[in-house]
Image (tube, rainbow, N blue to C red; front, top):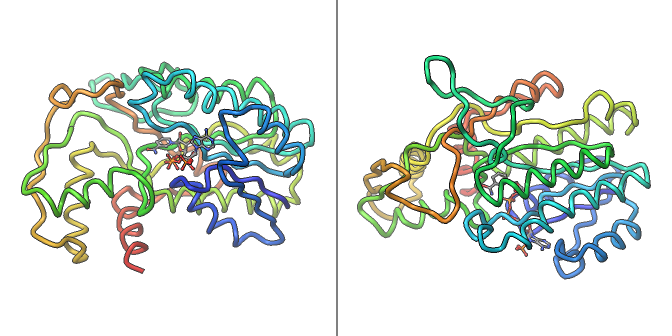
Length: 307
Ligand code: NDP
């Protein structure tokens, strides 16, 4: 099997570069950004035609949520148009596309009758509240419109020991500050890039075991929530990071006190949904994959950082 992997310098792409190596008889082609600029549709089209992959895995994206508010055209090309182009090209050669999307396709207003927050399922109505979410939703729709063999994996709050993310920001601030004030009214599931890569590789190997058949996509293709289990808010995530990092001796001084604040006290250019908790029931039912709790995934990530 030949896989074309995008975004090798990103959190998920970098982790995939390691986990995909474990697949049998698989060639992984992961070009640098200079050979694969997702703001250059002609280049991407030609690349797919030259490589003729059995599978494209596309974790590359315009992920700067706040900056997207003022760079909407660039975000729309990278997130909204290129995935559709990949779907169109891969369909012509009988291949498949695994694409990642986001919890931010939802507006965050889902609640139970008693007003408590409940998890979104895949079929819930999408209604992004920011430009990034709107461009990612456009990408999903473009893939579906092209009707190629595909999986759209919606993840959330991605972190790793690599790249730019909330975990690394908290670990840096832990050594600089005595007190941190973190938003406590946005709820979701922090998800480790290492788990995303491992679970994706597991899915690809299930396809391999099925003889890489077309029928497999009829059964298994579609949109899936792809996050850790459980839910927290950013303040709760920060407190858990401090507790686990302290217990593992990763901090250079006593952990700072982490206090919760409302989003109104931390204004950002892009609005964020209050509730972006995603149910993983479909992933479990269709692929037998049970995501770890967000706390266990954090522990696994910090162990990997120590090794
Ligand atoms: P990162 O921001 O860590 O990585 C993005 C990757 O995309 C980088 O390799 C980057 O390259 C590449 N990229 C961006 N623009 C271009 C371009 N014009 N041409 C070529 N490559 C480009 O993303 P994650 O790994 O965190 O995200 C993976 C997926 O998960 C994405 O689809 C994202 O939308 C989704 N997601 C992420 C969340 C998060 O919290 N990060 C939350 C929910 C969903 P370079 O290093 O050169 O910039």
